[in-house]
Image (cartoon, rainbow, N blue to C red; front, side, top):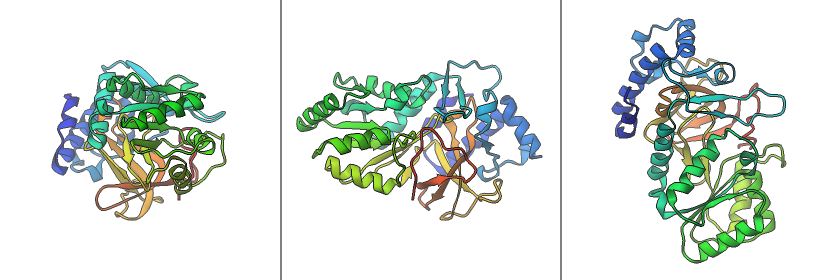
Amino acid sequence: MNADKIFTISSTNDFENQAIEIFNFQYQHVEVYRRYVDLLKIDPKTVDSISKIPFLPIQFFKSQKVIASGYTEEIVFTSSGTTGSETSRHYVASTELYKKSYLNGFQHFYGDVEEFCILALLPAYLERTGSSLVYMVDGLIKQSENENGGFYLNQHDELIEKLKALDGAGQKCILIGVSFALLELAEKYNLNLQNTIVMETGGMKGRRKEIIRSELHEILTKAFGLKSIHSEYGMTELLSQAYSKGDGIFQCPPWMRILIRETNDPLSIAPIGTSGGINIIDLANVYSCSFIQTQDLGRLHPDGSFEVLGRMDTAPIRGCNLLIYE
């Protein structure tokens, strides 16, 4: 299986063809997925469009080892979970493929990472092991080769002084942070950033009163002197990320796509513009499962962009996504 082909996708037809090819590969080689498809009594020979592909419920990553036969994991990413909850485990057969996915995804939306100094305020993730977000941000920091980039735990004063100096000198920066930590900064400092992108990854982690995304962004834009706040949408079970450059409207890279399923019929795809459960096609997940039925609620727009509206009523709250959405 030539996984690198996904980064050459340039049309809807390309995406469809590669999605069907990966579906057939995973049906043959990922035992958990094959058993699930068979349980649904779906003949893989009849799957000739992405609308017919079965999506594996994300809960399987908590109870099963989702990896293609003949492959061994190079790393295992784990979700943060909540107290007493079972965590997801993503067995990643190729860290090189993950690196290509997050680097190509970043370049698709923001250009060369070498142009940026990346500052990370991710205390909840740094305090545990197995975070795919920390792995990605660490890789971006190293790829940028900017000596001023790095992670910050609770050194707020040091971070702010570094940020003011870099921004004032005209250095393009990205401050990526978990929501509760960015709120703490916003309450302590007022800045007028000219060359910095502030990007939230979601996540109150039970440390703050939960607020809607628009309220969070309003607080952050005022505190940092910005017109908009960017957002990142990813999860342990994915190797790709969607990004929003404002207003909570996310875009996917060419090898990732969102479909919305009917809330009362998880096997049916909802019309564009209606809200429902988020199904994700992440072709970078070639050695695990590329077709995931999440427990997030969303709405798809005609141009392929999407909004995240919250969580399904019966879904446990994600440790990395305790933000309430509009």
